[in-house]
Length: 377
Image 1 (cartoon, rainbow, N blue to C red):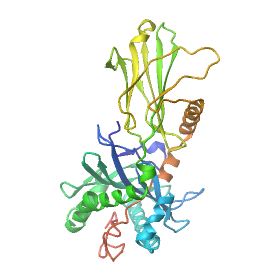
Image 2: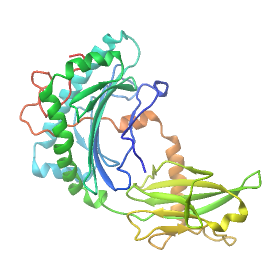
Image 3: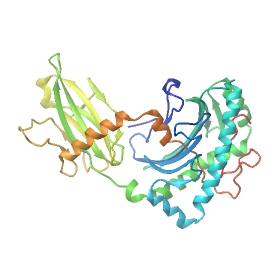
Image 4: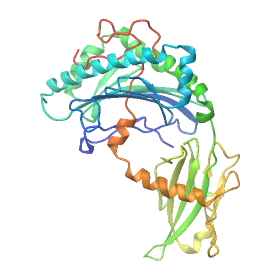
């Protein structure tokens, strides 16, 4: 199960390095609403100066960028927002344009603060909320500069945590703004959750569906007389899944390797895990999979395949096809080809769902409609 909400890669990974890790509360199914912004000092090669995207769980729901200058839906079911408010997309476009201006000013100020007049620099924000099936709530709001942590909001203390001396300047000016910080906390704990629940209702056929995993165990001989069993788990949704090797019915950790849960092109997920064993103990091992789509845990052992037969798979639906195996191989290739730049372009933005009539960008006019602040203000 995933635990962290955000990954900030080392600066060597490139200038655009803010990338979410779709997390969940341990031991519980959860849903999340997250927004991401990025501002770039020197746009080019198809990369806009400003990008804003929003996600519900793993699905991108909106996008705005400085090239199109329009706030647009990325999934059909987001059009339902128009039924509640015909001016929804126009209003959100205005807010996004204001945030674009605010981030451009903040990035310029940070470059001056760090004495960096040349080169590509980025200013990024990730924030959102999470709701688990057992009612637990989470929220986060944090910024990065040039791919490194800059400053993060602590909603429990209503203060900001600075990552370096440059961010201390911002902290000293943001901490005393109690009204704005209280608004942040209210958004993360209440308003964001309300919008998450609304979006889950809009997209319930997609977001609340379940698809059972297809499971297959293969083996390969190792040079030292041992062998490796590989458990391929694919075609499942939602992404929360528990998969382990068990020996004689008990979870076995020794010699095991586990990959990350990764997306397939069809909106489902796959996971690979392996274990190195003594071939004489092969029959004692099973790959155990637990998922919301399964009534009970699924235990799968390696089975010898007859010559010229279709690979045998196991699923909670009682079916497994060659197409699933092909999808797994294809998705592995696509996943390996992804770059961090793609990850950033697909996952950057900020909220615009505060209930307010005013939508200013300055500290004087700051409202729930535009919760950004000038990093140097």
